[in-house]
Image (cartoon, rainbow, N blue to C red; front, side, top):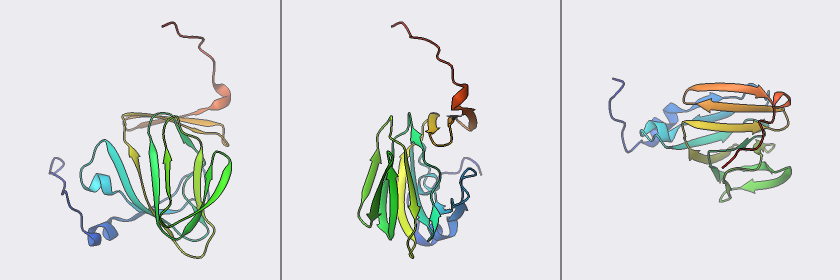
Length: 161
C-alpha cells in the first residue's frame, strides 16, 4: 500500500538489500552504491543515505546548492574532496558541511579501497543547483527537474523592496 507507515528502525540486512547503483549522466566516472535511509524510514524533510564509491570512481558532478544544505561524514576508506576549487584528502571521521548558498564540491575515490560515507541534507520542494564547470543550472520543483544553460541567463534587473 502506498500509504503504509514506514518503519522507524531499518535493520542492516534491509539496508544492504536496498542498496542500488547510481551514476550521474554528465560524469562517465560517476558510480555510487547507496541506500536511501531517510526514505526507508519515511523522512520527508531530511535526506540521509549510506553511500559507497568503489575504487577509481566518483560521486556525481562538481556542483553547488542554492537552497538545500548538504553534509557528508566519512565512515571508511579515503577519498579526494574537491571544495571550492581546492582538493583535500579525506578519511574516516572527517565531516564536510555545505550551508547555503554552498561552495561547489565533489568527491572521488582514486584509492584501492571503497570510500564509505553518510550523506544527507534538506529535502525541500524547491532546489536550485549550479554545475559551474558544465555551465548548467538545475531547478527542481517537487518531482520536476529543469536544466538550463548558464549562458542563456538574462538579468531581470534589481528588485524593489
